[in-house]
Length: 158
Image 1 (cartoon, rainbow, N blue to C red):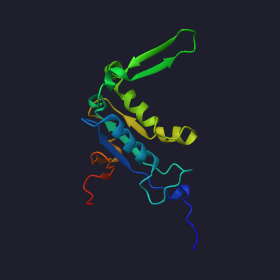
Image 2: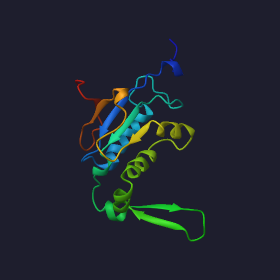
Image 3: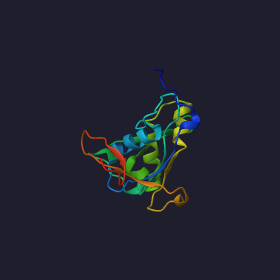
Image 4: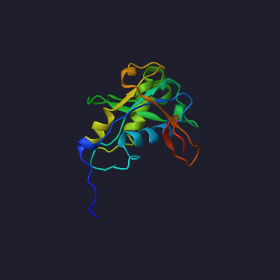
């Protein structure tokens, strides 16, 4: 018996919609990163992009636990001396709620060309509307509480 090696034409891509309303940021990001990477597929291979497309809506209604809204900061630097800026999550959610979610998911993907390719399959929208109806996306239910990480499309029996 030989080991199966996944080839690019064998990869099937699907589109999923995730509603971030009331979801905890870190838990949502880990599950979305897993779908983007394709970890739940039987033919997953760490050197290939086997993941699916993910559309996240209602990013402005994401939740954070504890005091992270005021204590967690994002650092940016323009390259000029003394031009570093610190922005709290609360300020970022007011200005760019989509970037908070993108940053969290990006941190959970590989830090190389493959990770950048996976990030191109992520679309984040602040409100409930998105322009991807033509792809017939399935609703992705992120169920499970503490310690459980079951991810399945809505309507699939366990």
